[in-house]
Each structure stands twice: as structure tokens, then as C-alpha cells.
Amino acid sequence: MRKAMSVIMPAALLGVAILVSGCSTLSRGPVGNMAVPQPAKAVDIARYQGLWYEIARYENGFEKGCEAVTAQYGPLPDGKIEVINTCHKGAVDGPVSTAKGKAKVVDGSQNAKLKVSFFGPFYGDYWVLDRADDYSWAIVGEPSGRYLWILSRTANLSEADRNTLFTRAGELGYNTALIRPVKH
Image (cartoon, rainbow, N blue to C red; front, side):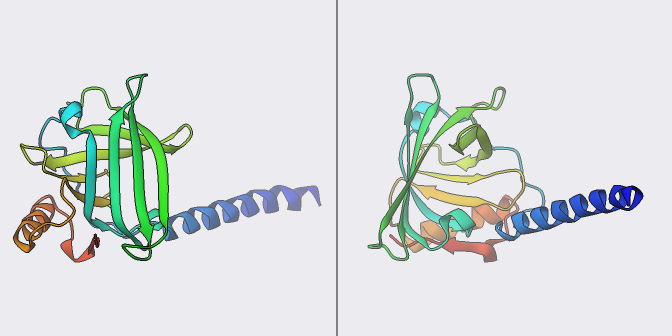
């Protein structure tokens, strides 16, 4: 009996680990960029702060069905950055959902890489892969290639400007067929 338990327990733990890891990958989207590049430009954090409108994204579990999405960045007394993400569930005029978090700059990244947390001590990658010289738009991703956000300082871009940003995301290696436009 003891010998059987010594074989069954590790097998059961392995099965649970496989099940848990399998479920966690179900909530993530497909990899849309197999080789995410390093950020193209340094970021002036003071100029990056303020209100951004999410123009498009790779769909993900935590923003499923969100429209009229905004991100507000501002300084915190401890030197970190406050992050306030707001979305309207299901429609531009749908119920508002807000998530508050904080970000910190990754040393040696020229401020283009941040670690963002909405859940206590757990931080995720946030890379400003490219941006306009005047900070009017930004393309944000992270190393896995599963997440992509196209941000703008204005909610409604012209079709030409939107196409330019989608093209730039493609030049950065992103599968543009996976990009989901956001309504405002």
C-alpha cells in the first residue's frame, strides 16, 4: 500500500499541475508575435503620463467585451506610476468597470519597459514598443506576444491614421488579423 501511494501521489500531483497549467493557457489569447522586438525609443515618463484611449488590442480575458477603454497614468508619491484602466462592458454606453494598479520602470530600459500590477505583489510586463515623437500614439506589448495595445491621445482616429498604426504593429511582427478595434 505504501509503495502504491508513493507512485500514485506524484502522478496525481503531476496531473493536477498539467490541468492547472492547461486551464491557465485557455484564458490567454494566441501568440500573435513570435519575436517581440525590444522597444524602439526611450520614453519620457512625464510626457507618457495622462489619458490614453485604447484604439485596438489583442482580445484578452480581462478586457473581454470592453469598449470605450481608457488608461490614465499619473505619478505616485513613492515614484511609481498610478494606472487607472476604465472600460464599458459590452457597449460604449455599457456599465463602467475600473481597475486600479501601479507601475514601476524597469532599470536600464530607458523607461520603455514597465512592470504593472493590479494584484498586490504580482507584476506583468508592459513594453512601450513604439510611440510618436509627440506622444500622440503608442504601441504597447510584452515579451510573450499574446498581448498588444494600440493607444492614442484621441478617441477617434481617422481611418488613415488607424491603418498606419495597424501597419506599424505588423512591422513590429504582430499578426494584424488578431487586432480587435475598440469602439468609442
